[in-house]
Image (cartoon, rainbow, N blue to C red; front, top):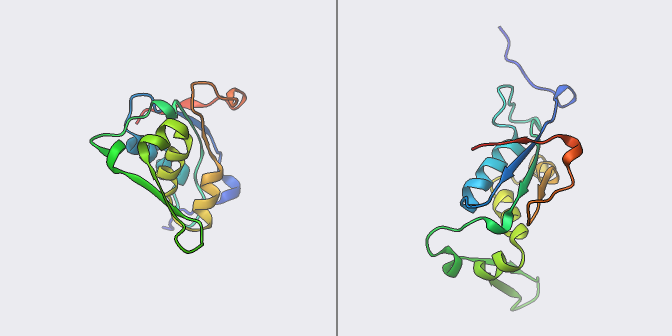
Length: 142
């Protein structure tokens, strides 16, 4: 008996929609990363990109539990001496909630070419409106 190996050409990619309203940011990101990676499929193969498309709506209504709004920071560096920038999650969620959700999902995916291709299939929207109705997305309940 041989082990089944999925092939990129034979995969049928579906579209899923996740509503982040009232849900913790991390739990929504876990559900999105699982779908993007393809781990919810029975034919998941680790070295093949088996993932599907994910639309996250209401990213501005996602919640952070505990004291994360005040204590958690997003750090990035400009590359110059003394160029470390720190943004508090309270300001990040108020100004760019899509960026906060994108960072959470990106850090849950592998840091290789499969992870980068998976991130290209992620669509995040601040409100409830999205322009992917033609793809007939299915509601994903995690």
